[in-house]
Image 1 (cartoon, rainbow, N blue to C red):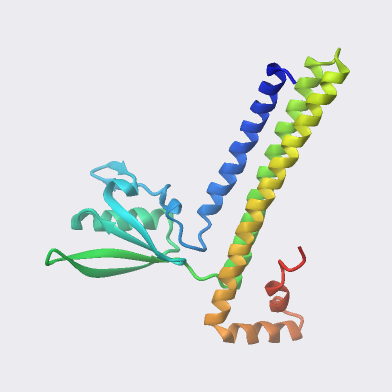
Image 2 (cartoon, rainbow, N blue to C red):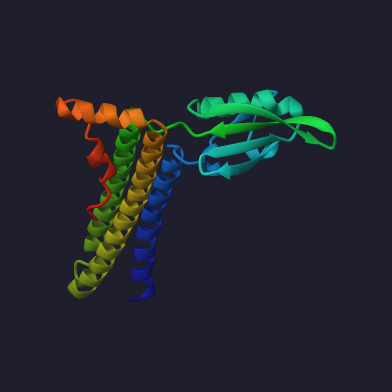
Length: 229
């Protein structure tokens, strides 16, 4: 395959890669586990000027479900709280004090929200919806590329078949990548839900009781939703 053909394939691949990266980025803002990248959209407004979180604080992860923020200056604390709340009102905040050079300072400890049944259902719906949107864009790009090369190589059927096969391969590859990103996020949601049930065992009994009466949801099915693969 000559350089012109490769250029066409690379263009198709770059476009599709962009949508899969965007899908992954969107999922990072459907927060289940602590992920510092979820703070990327946060604007810290100081004197009317928006600042990124890294401009005003240091960010760390204490465990899978907690983010810790160390403001660079004490007087930035309220601005940081406002900025994070605007982007992630679901985060649970605890302000803690600590000593630094015999001076009392404060850190912001953010706990990721629990994944109860309602949140699991909402997150799952959002994850699937964003995946379907990404899959639609990949299909559209593929259809446009196939139509374009069909015009370019209509007098060269052998070359056309070769390019179409490569375009099909790229399309199938990124469809599979998008599916993998989706499945990983769904697993994360389910893990968060199981964590919630462990902390609230009464919810399991309530769910089973609803199931017996034909109401609510099937807890057992929810626990096993990833065992089929």
